Length: 221
Picture 1 (cartoon, rainbow, N blue to C red):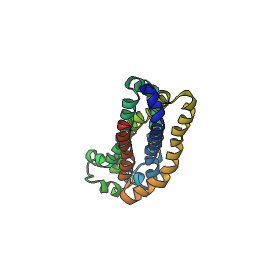
Picture 2: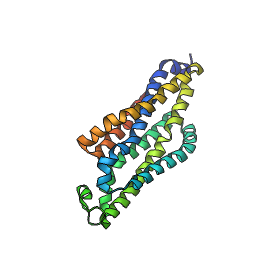
Picture 3: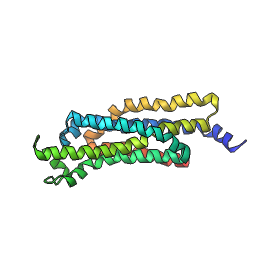
Picture 4: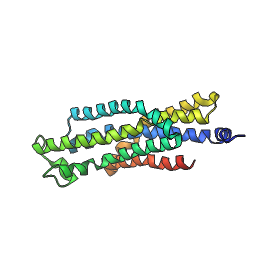
């Protein structure tokens, strides 16, 4: 039996489980902002709904553009390296959101701590500077997140083509694709409690760090 046949027989369903987990993490990471926005981020950075709309629209547009190139990148790098790079990039981008408060204090004069951001008078020039600066910082983080997340589905589909015979490919695809729904359902159950218990920054870090854990298993399995 060839090496490829052995991999198809022995490891394919383990790989499928990893694809499912990666897709679940993918959808968890992209929802942290929406689930922490109203209660935590909006009052801290003095955002308006228009600011939030700008950020979410940018993510969607940049994600769509990145998808045009993600498949070619995975073909070039191969599934193992390509998937590792993709989830590494988006996990880094997810965790990077947590630094936006600290980074905002570096660029806005008169604000020397993250705690002081929320205390600034609403409607003041300082509040406007905080909202403008933080929006640009979040746009950067969302761009990195979108760039990495665009590689998830091309890599997952290529893995099923490489390690699954034709008779099992549709079933394997349906399994990992179910991770999108699981991630969307799990996010409201775990992200708000994390933000309330540890702060919105740690919600980004904890959920983002799941991708780095996944990378360990992908590299060695």
